[in-house]
Length: 137
Image 1 (tube, one colour):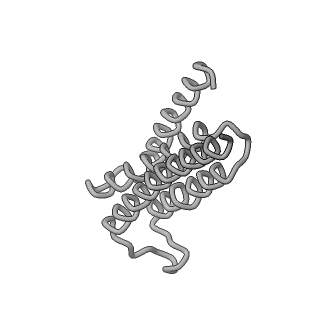
Image 2 (tube, rainbow, N blue to C red):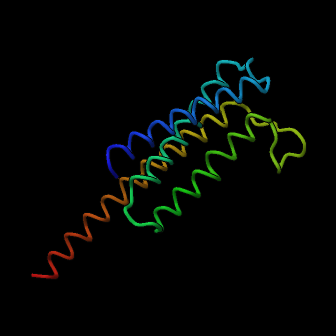
């Protein structure tokens, strides 16, 4: 990616985050408690990390890695954020009964999962590169 594309992507992330907070505010969700703000911040951190790794981790147009990040972005970040904001979960009927702590700890676990995946992927890539060098000799 060129510098212009990277700066455009970062601008996109900032505008998307600002738009998300504005939508939350204008739809009447401005009276969040302190723990609810913390939960939303952890959701936004996970969304931004997923977007960054989706765009910058691979040079190919499609791969298992990109599928992994798209899945995480949709099913572990964006949809749970919407369920949290609107207090609706499909498995609990019309309204949810999850506490903010459950969402917060789940987001922290998801964040650790992201870090574990990135570290393991980098380690595996290094091992395969070392194996290829050893086999070629």
